[in-house]
Length: 214
Image (cartoon, rainbow, N blue to C red; front, side, top):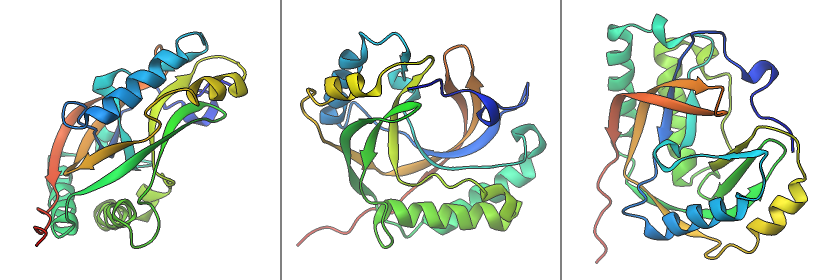
């Protein structure tokens, strides 16, 4: 593995960026909490990994590219919130499966399902991208965040991903439910010292109540 925050991944000094995230609720999804905490324990021997603390766990749906958040004023933020609300208002809340945990080149992540065309995460992704593009232009969605994943740790140094993966394979449960009832528009800052991300809320966009099963 090699450090995550290098080169083009490092934002200009002072920048923050608007992002649309899914934020897991570990109190509701206790199986997911066990998976996350089990992976964190498995990663503890590896000093080149910086686990993501519970409050900052996230699934990236779409970042707003090319425009620092400071240049997106209240009017445009309100317009973007309204457009996202309209785009997602008919998407029912859904549940994804998180896992297995995977050690990639620069991060450890929990893979997510639901990101194929016609599946719920893909629907949220495509509608979110369309809403952002409508308000801020097509350049704002130049980055593609799929396949879906929940980031568990960022690499801050070099290390053997094979050893990390072997440790992660011992974690049980290896899969868990992640409930999605809303999406979040956030003003996100890079924490280069911790090799991670922090944010302040801009708007919460609820999904539709799923129909009752009969």
